Image 1 (cartoon, rainbow, N blue to C red):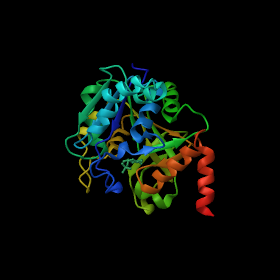
Image 2 (spheres, rainbow, N blue to C red; image 1 turned 90 degrees about the vertical axis):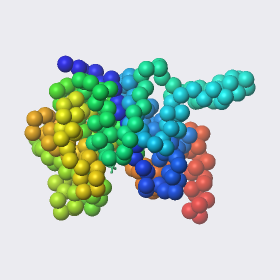
Image 3 (cartoon, rainbow, N blue to C red; image 1 turned 180 degrees about the vertical axis):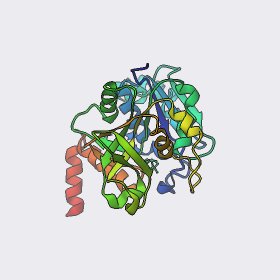
Image 4 (cartoon, protein in one colour; image 1 turned 120 degrees about the vertical axis):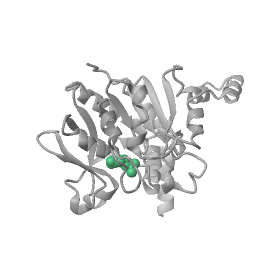
Length: 289
Ligand code: G1P
């Protein structure tokens, strides 16, 4: 029985249509929040949580994500020549041991479930994490949601864990919504329901710890009306045979998959940054008169 979560899957093959035209030739995961791309923040959260192997499910036009996790030789030479240690550190910060980073082509953007399924041969027979880079959190504690979820997982390593957060129920159509029974046990889940069909105001927030059995259910999951294989639908089928526990976070969630959430993330992260906090406050005061 595996107790440690060593591997994380980052689905980054989506088309990013909500950010067009910015994302016509640039992956939405490379949009920066402060000085780091969204995918870099997600990577840091995973690294802080003790993840050792990083599996990116990519697509065409996503090569700048690969490049971001590789050496930038000219830049490094230049910064070394200038003896600019701080920038050199930033440039090399997301390099990890060769062999522990994998880029897989999804070939077609067939949905989150399909993206996760693409990782099956790399994951093998152990529980693993899934991180959606769009979902960012601002926490009081600095350890990160995934760290907390992995600690939670340690109390019952046979379970699957889904990160959830309270939402305004009028927004149920944007999320996977869960029904929680006794304690933290997930009884049901439904992907993007109408408000009238939503079993609660608790939404899945882009952090999962899954048992490898999920691949069996993903394989048998049909595409939805939009042509996408939904992870939520596979998890729902798996519920009959496998325990899902909800990890509820009170951390402030930023939905960087839409423009307003993304802008808010930049403002909030700037306000938390020692260098930018005061200038941003001044700037906001000026803007708002
Ligand atoms: C995905 C999941 C959904 C979840 C959401 C969180 O949807 O399918 O269950 O609530 O992420 O951000 P997407 O935002 O990719 O449409």
